[in-house]
Amino acid sequence: MAHEHKPLFDEAIQEMLNSLKTEDEMTEKQRRIMEAAIALFAEKGFHASSTSEIARRAGVAEGTIFKHFKTKKDLLYALIGPMFIKFASPLILKDVKQIINEDLPAEEVILKLYRNRLALLEENWPRMRIVLQEALFHPDIMNALLENLVKDARGLAEASVKNRIEQSEFRPLPVKAITRAIFSTMLGYVFFSKAFPDEYANEDKDKDLRDAVDILMYGIANKRPDSL
Image (cartoon, rainbow, N blue to C red; front, side, top):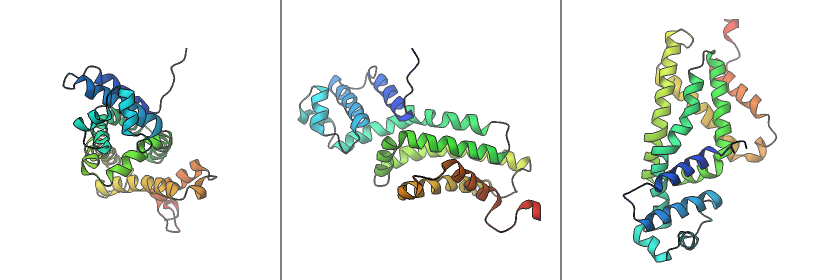
């Protein structure tokens, strides 16, 4: 029987569930509450999951949840930080490491990276949307993202950019400026595709990404390197 593929966040959630079974610092009730919360958040999303449902699945009184976690959001925070630190970050960055180390021209590497990140986002969007929404208003979640995902991704990208500058494939611009442009182009595409879904529903995503990489590499001026 073939292994059933799970979206990355679901895989991270399952890994966290498995880890809770051996976490000695938790009481049995805390563990059951967190297991129930993870399962429900994964199935229904954060906002559609009530503390009464979590309590019912955990086999505890609803009041027991509030003895350990002041609010449902506190329970969410207790899950998101560890999930990013221990499970989601390595899974998210695994493909990035492989792609940026491929012996291909920069244009092809960036396009491949954009395709991969967009596929990851689309597959995991329901979970990621919850995390991103909460991160905007809660420093603890934002710090978990920055320290355990963005920081590592930036480090990988800057090392690759520095290498390509040394090989004269990129102009000798500041490494951080080039890295920021690469990240910003992808984030801009994601923002517009999510902000205006009807406009992007029937677009050729691969062509859009190719156009984005072309603009990133060669700019928007009405001249190309071969015309200089």
